[in-house]
Length: 386
Ligand SMILES: Cc1cc2nc3c(=O)[nH]c(=O)nc-3n(C[C@H](O)[C@H](O)[C@H](O)COP(=O)(O)OP(=O)(O)OC[C@H]3O[C@@H](n4cnc5c(N)ncnc54)[C@H](O)[C@@H]3O)c2cc1C
Image 1 (cartoon, helix red, strand yellow):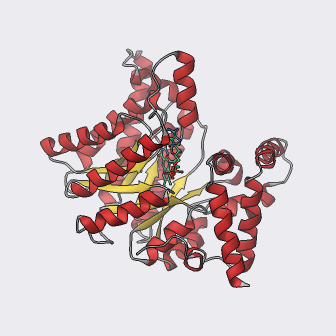
Image 2 (cartoon, rainbow, N blue to C red; image 1 turned 120 degrees about the horizontal axis):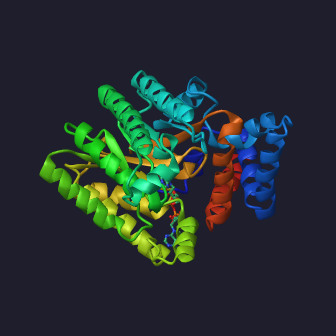
C-alpha cells in the first residue's frame, strides 16, 4: 500500500536548513499580497538592473529550477537519481518570438537530447511549439485560414525545426513530449504532433502529445488517435495533464461568446482524467503515458490500475511526473516503491525563467489547498526531525 504521508521519504534529500527554507518560501507564497507583489517587484527590479538575481537564485529559483544551463543542472540530476527519480530538462525561457529565438530554442532542445543520450537519468525531453513558432501564425493555422506566401515559408521553417528535433529524438531513442497550450492553437499543435508520431513512432513511442483533460472533448480525442494509430500502424505517446489555462480559456470563451471547451466542473475533469488513465492501461500495448499530475488520488489510482492490468511498476510505458520543488511526497514515495518517476526540471538564466517562477508562485496561491498541503507536510517533517 502506498502512502503519500511518509514525510521522511518525501524529504529525505533535504537538509534541515533546506527544509526551513522551503517552509518560509511556501509560507510566503501562501500570502496572496506578498507573492503577487514579490513577482512584480522582481520584474521591475530586474528591468532596472537592481541586483536581485542573487536573492532570487538562492530562494525560489533553487526550489523550482535545476540551474541556469544544461551542465549547471548536473547536481540536481544526480541528487534526484540517488532516490531513483529521473529528470526532464525543460528549457523554460518564455515569451520570445523572433526567428533567432526560435532557432535558439531548437538548438537548445537538440543540445538537451544530446546531453540526455549520454545520461541515463534523463529518459525524456520536452518542448513547447510556441518556443519554435509565432503564436499568431499558429492561431491562423488553427482557424484554417489561408496563409500568405511569406507565412507559408515561415510555417515551413517551423516544421523544419520541429522535424529536426523529432529526428534527433528518434535517432537517440529519447522520447520527447510536446506540451499542450491554449485551445485556440491546440488543433494546429495536434496536427503537427500527429504527423510526427506517424513518422517517428513506428517501433516505439518517441513523440508524445499532451492531452488536457480539463477539456470536455479530450477523452474522445485520446480514443480517436489511438484508433488511428492502430489502423496506420504506429505507437502513441501521451502526457496526460488536467490543463494549465483554465481561467484564460473560460474568460476568452465568455468574452468572444462561444461555448467554453472546459468541463462543467472539477469533478468532470477528474473523471475524464481517471478514465484516460484506465483507457491507457487497458491499451498499454499501443499507448505509452506520462501522468503529469500532483493529484494524489489520480496517482494512487494509476498504481492500482497498473496492478489490475498486470503492468510492472518499472514498465517504461508508464511514468509519473511532477514539477521540481512540488509534490515531493508523491514523487519520492512512488519512486521508493519502484515506480517510474520523472521530475520536470526547468532551467535557464534567472531573469529569463522569472515568468515561470511567478506562475509557480501564482499557481501555488490559486490552487486551493496546494500550498497548504506542501506546507503542512514540511511542518510535519520539521517536527519529526526535532
Ligand atoms: C509534469 C507536468 C507537466 C505538465 N505539462 C502541462 C502541459 O503541457 N500543458 C498544460 O496545459 N498543463 C501542463 N501541466 C499543468 C497541469 O495541466 C495542471 O495545471 C497542474 O498539474 C494541476 O493539476 P493536477 O492534476 O496536478 O492537480 P489538481 O490540483 O487535482 O487539479 C487542478 C486542475 O484541475 C483543473 N480544474 C480545476 N478546477 C476546474 C473546474 N472547475 N473545471 C474543470 N477543471 C478544473 C485545472 O486543470 C487545474 O489546474 C503539467 C503539469 C505537470 C505536473
